[in-house]
Each structure stands twice: as structure tokens, then as C-alpha cells.
Length: 154
Image (cartoon, rainbow, N blue to C red; front, side, top):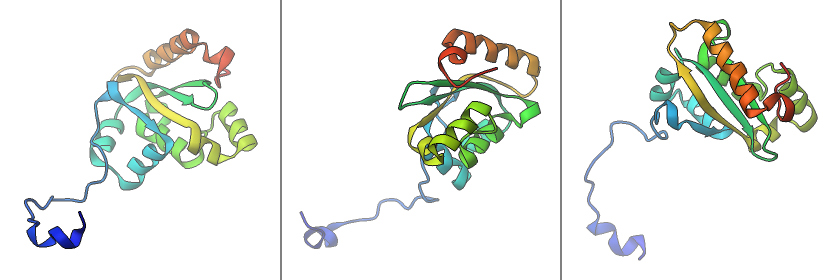
């Protein structure tokens, strides 16, 4: 069918209150984002995502989908919670982490944009002690062996 043959039969049923700007926050257990999705959420200031991430502490996973290497990180009150940590990765691809800085210097920021995926392993409210989050981060690094086979060196 061509538009010209049906245009007079079309009817507007609903006008949405705002422009569709991507999916709503799916819950902490269902977060898995490409770099492009993360950047879009931050650029558009997607409210459901911002509200969910800005006051959360977390242990998160970055996966290099081109080679399977993992990076386990944490977001605490000392480093600006999860929204700030992930904003840093969206801005420069490395968030200040030595191994990721070296990777970006070697392969370029476009490599991160094409290959990195971000997920939440565990999330915590803002009141939990940072030491608990850091201990869990270390546990995940050991469990996933990201120090031996990934991008973690500490």
C-alpha cells in the first residue's frame, strides 16, 4: 500500500504528552546497555533512568564484546554514585581506570563506543556503607577473574 491510497482513511487516535525518547528504566536486575544507549540516556536526561541511577551505589560490569574481557567497578559516595560513574565512561570511555585508559589510548574511543556493554551486578541504596560495596566489588573481581583475564588490575 502507498500512503496516497490510505491517507484519507487515517485517523489520529491519541497524541502522546511527550516525544518518545527511549525505553523506561527496566529495573536494576534488567540493565544491560551499549555505549550508545548509555550516551543517549544521559544526553536526553531520560528521567526514569536518571532518578534510578543518581542515588544508587552499585557494583557494575563492563564487558568488551569484541574479546569477552570484563571490568568490574563500583559506584560509591566517594566517586559520585552510579549515574556519575557511568557518565564518566560515556564522556571518555575509561572513567579514569588505568587499564581502560591504556585501551582507549591504544584503540581509540570509537573502540569503546562500538564494543562496550554496561550492566549492574548489584545495587545498593545511598545509606549502605561504601566498605560493603567495595568488598562486594572485590568478590565479583575474584569470581569473574577480571584481574587475571580482564581489565581490572587492582
